[in-house]
Image 1: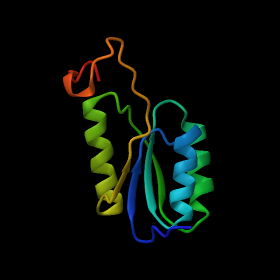
Image 2: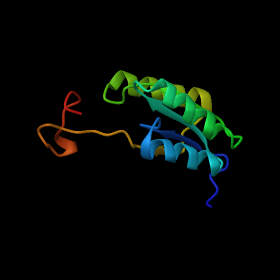
Image 3: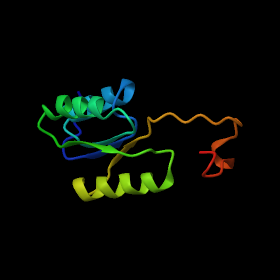
Length: 110
């Protein structure tokens, strides 16, 4: 397994599915991890507990990454708790009704 010892990671959508697996894998590889959840607090706390068994810092943070202000709070929390940000895993799903290319989306559409 690759070593991520000493790295700080932010994983969006980390309370279930691929995101939860990424949180656990990154922690197992030695990274400190902050991840977000929106509604599934119990699931997020379970992931935090399981991933934390590897001896790294793992923290769940409630934030809706579809909201700009929540994104700012999430990154600020990550920097405050981990001291820096080395890795970003943008796993939270985004679906755009108008099917615009991302570079043409407004913040509201995002």
